Length: 224
Image (cartoon, rainbow, N blue to C red; front, side, top):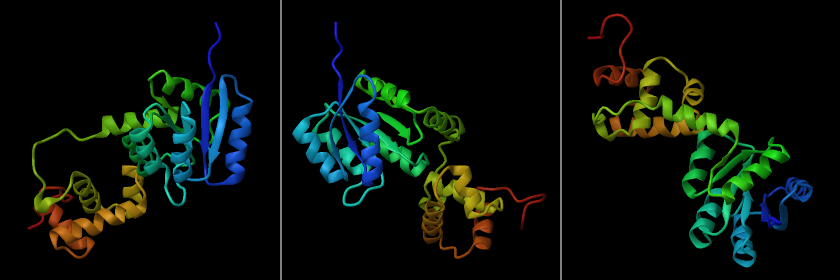
């Protein structure tokens, strides 16, 4: 009994990378590359035309990025599974892609065997995740705070509350980004949002606010 090859398209905005991936896949067993696209718009059109089993999807591309292309493909062509193949494994890349419908997520240092396994996994209805991504998901689950039922003041979100607590503990934006596995730009966005909601204007005021609202404990005795 012969097993039908997985029909795959490759989506990446860098021609050299795209052609290299196509060449690599052509050497791997059980895979037939049926097309390639340079951005998300082309990817959506190609899926509509060719109905591949799997799209190997880069994330950061012009016109239509990989997250939006994934969302559209999974909505309009649910028979095509998405395996993200990207340079980035940070939270700002990983979680939006998974929420958009990607069932696989690999970084571009993945070997041929790992790519084949991810493609086979998503075609079988399983998650095709690299070991690094699996570890990150586990960390996210195990480090999530226990729900307390407490509503944060001034409409702060849970993530804004986390950022505020870390500010009060003396962490820099870079420290906060590393601890929360987000980019420093995202940290700045959260800070701007929480400043706007609370009416505070600098980190010193943020520290006092966090102490007053019980979001952080001052070192030693409490501040009066």
